[in-house]
Image (cartoon, rainbow, N blue to C red; front, top):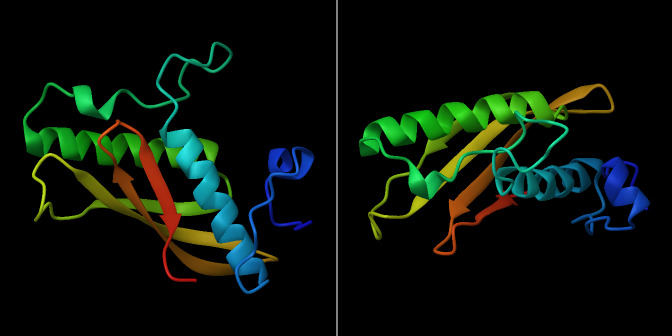
Length: 139
């Protein structure tokens, strides 16, 4: 069992398989799994934490530019508040070449692993069913 998994992953034995067995890879997989769960939680769905969750990103009633800017800002603040392993998180929207209605983005930041800061990048994609998938980039 990896000590780099989250508490709930260790308790529930839902520890992601470490790719290559390194602490960095284990942490990246764990953080990506947590980010995916976080970003798929809707605002107001956690009674004990009213600020936990995101609004439905498919339901923003602003211009495209304003919606992207607002989504980026909301995701950054949410990560800062609820994913302490990832610091200095920045969200960058990716160009929508193929599908103008899709939303893909990159989350970059720094992971503190055993007292050493490592840069980390995750890719996120809002799929057709309204769920956000988050994957660690090349490990």
